Image (tube, rainbow, N blue to C red; front, side):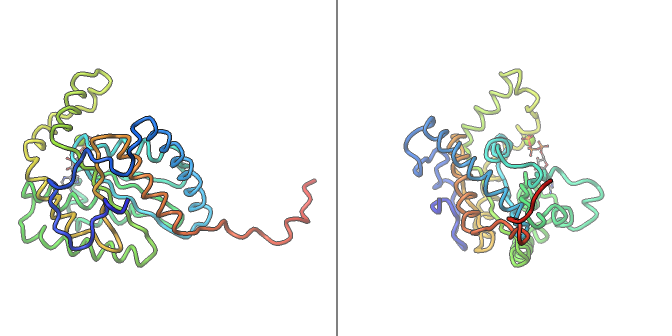
Length: 267
Ligand code: ATP
Ligand code: MG
């Protein structure tokens, strides 16, 4: 899946990244779903090992335009993991208390501890995305944040956190269809947020803001992946594959059991 990884220092032009791409799996959706089932089982075992070993920390950052599929990834990629070792942190517009602090204050306390996997549903990247698009702070203020974020993530990485960042890339047409489905299907209506239309009108501004984020903050220690996400099954497959490969690369071991267990007799 390295083809979706943004090399550090790349100038990203999202127009050149096809949200319909499915180059890494050409056998179609139903075979894709079978492959997904296998990856889900592998992730289940690896997450158990991560928790049992209790040494490493894994942070997964999800960013996308509205309807991009963050909720779907959380639902399907993590289908089989044990909730005891996995947390989701969703970042909405900051509260008054959060705004009274620096923008990383609310983020840092949700980062994973040893043996944990944490999924960020939106993240500190909103502070150089929505904040930039809506001019919520002056350019001189948000302009410094790319460097802050790279430093913050490097600190986390050096202190033992593996960071994987996924941008779920959908087309503007695909967003239209998904928003329309939320209007048309009664069980999806609760998800329809009129405010999303205002953000949709700023699509091009968001794409420019994402291009800068992806170009400036994909690092050796915290890479971005641009995930083709018009097809949900393919999106899930790509993310699961990156996760499984990464966790397998850890070569984790179950902790050594106590000595002489063979001699233990349970009365
Ligand atoms: P859903 O799929 O349920 O719509 P969501 O992530 O879009 O999920 P919402 O409550 O609709 O959740 O939106 C959260 C909003 O909070 C987004 O519009 C996002 O841009 C905004 N937000 C997040 N972080 C910040 C921030 N640091 N500053 C300003 N706005 C933020
Ligand atoms: Mg929303």
